[in-house]
Structure formats: structure tokens, C-alpha cells
Amino acid sequence: MAKQGIIFNIQRFTIHDGPGVRTELFFKGCPLRCDWCSNPEGLSPRIQPGVYKSKCISRKACAACESACPVEGTLHFYRGKLTEIDRELCTGCLACCDVCPSEAIKQWGRPMTVEACMEEIRRDKGYYDRSGGGVTVSGGEPLLQSDFVAELFRACKADGFHTCCETTFYTDWSTVEAILPWTDLLISDIKHMDTQVHRAYTGVGNERILENLVRLAELDKELILRIPVIPDVNDSEENIQATADFILGPMGGRVRTLQLLSFMRLGEEKYQSLGMPYKMAQVKINRRSFQKHVNRLAEYFNSRGIHCLVGTREKE
Image 1 (cartoon, helix red, strand yellow):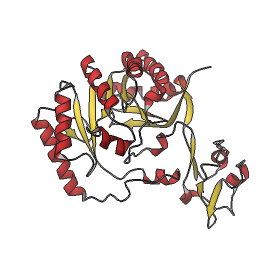
Image 2 (cartoon, one colour; image 1 turned 180 degrees about the horizontal axis):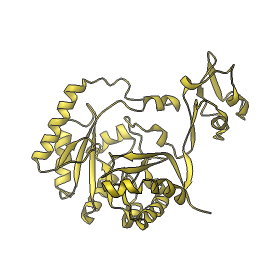
Image 3 (cartoon, rainbow, N blue to C red; image 1 turned 120 degrees about the horizontal axis):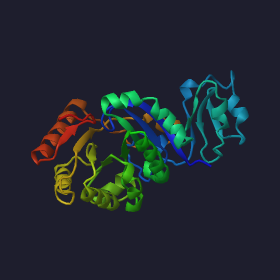
Image 4 (cartoon, rainbow, N blue to C red; image 1 turned 135 degrees about the horizontal axis):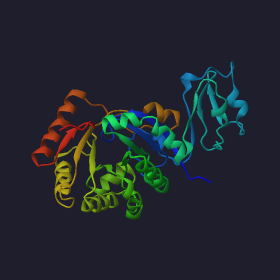
């Protein structure tokens, strides 16, 4: 039986995660729980239903989901509209997704073979050729499905496609090594240099991540580093200086680009669809002044000799 990966989204014509025009595959499952994550549908490794109550055409007019659900009381309605799914009762059968005529219940994740992925990828070969683009895997954390990623990247390289892996690096080094022969570029974050603060906001310490970044730098593999700049979390002068010291010290400055990603409130509707709290809901910022702050951070990194840009578009 062909190996399968669990993928929750495929985006074509992306220009933010690697060079040129790309096809990006988002894999289910992540070992981190970052408070600001914009892809909560990628956290669980399981295929899940998500509820979009605004699309529900009403229990009175339809109720197909309720009829299909094998466990009574799993689906909750308010004023005739489906509002949530009891995640404790839900069996994950996805029967409700199959019968919903209005896509008020969305299936997050589907199994795909390497060949099925390649069929999607090959559709845009002409764009890769003209733009210097290719294929990016992201998540979630794609290295939780590293065997599948390795096989997918091997197929991509056989077709001459540039490959990029966006990863948390919170994994064993042997897992990283498994994909390196077929990986042209890696993208990873440094979220905070203090492991206790890192744990408080992501659920895990940073030691394994930093160790893997150093080992990758020693191999001189092409790497884009990112800092998601989160107000009052990792944007202090002390943390920014410590990050620069780490890049220039243990990593030897071997970073293609450092990209600063300004905090934005993203993915709130997806949290609601999954019945999950959005932990950044109370964060309020003045967008203009915060952007100036992020620009000043970029100036600091550049003054230290680290090629730093604000945003994900690469430019000299």
C-alpha cells in the first residue's frame, strides 16, 4: 500500500515561503502550541471537523449532519444553527462533513499519497521554471511525517523541482537528516532565546531547536530564519541582542536571510471552528507604531551584519 501523508491544505501560487512561485503543502500535527499560531487546524495529527456556523442553512431546513452523526448529542445547535461539536463525544467519523450541503462543517485534513501530491505539484511546473520556484512543505510540523516528506521531496527532485521545508526543528537530528539529501532550503523560527519563556508561550523548551539550528549551520545548508515578533513576548532589547549573538556566534552567521514577521491576529475564525480558545484575543497594538518598532529591530540586525528583512518576500 502506498505511503500516505495527512495534509490539511495545498496552496498554489504562493510567494512567501521560499523563492519564486511555489506550491505549498501543509501537514497535520505539531509538537508546539504557540499562543499566536495562525494554523490551529494543523496542530492535531488527526483529521478533524471544523464548524462554520455562518454557513449553516439551519436545522429546520436541513439537519443532514444530525441524521448522519452516530452519537446523539455530539452536535450542538443554537437558534436553529449548528454552533459546535462536542469534541469528547465526536468519533471522528466525518459523516457530518460528507453530508453537509453548505460546507458549514469543513474537514481539516485528508490522506494523500506521494503521487496524488505530485499530480497537484506538476500542474504548476511552468510557473516554477519561469520564476525559480518550487515546492514547500509546512504545517503544523511536516517532520512529524518525515518519511513521507523524504519520499515526496525525492519525487520532486526527480522532476527537477526546488524543495523547501518549513519546520520548527523541534525534533531529533536523525529526523532532520532523513530529508536533507532532497532539501534545497529550510525555513525555521527563533521564537525566544530564553527556554523558560519559550516554554511558557509555545509549550516546549528551545534547547533542541537551537541545537538543530547549530548543526544545520555547520553543514552550511541554505537556511532562512524567522522571528515572529510578538509584542511584550520576544521584542525586548535583551532578547533581540541575544538572538543576534546566537546567529553570529554558535551559528557562525550562516543564515541566508533573517525575516521579521510582525504579529497579526490571524486564524481566529479557525479557532472558533475547532472550539479552541484564541490566546491572543486581548492583544491590542497600534499597527503603525508597532511596524516602526519592527523596522528598528531589522535595522539593528543589519547593523550587526545579519541580512535582515521585514516580511517574507526576499529582496536584496
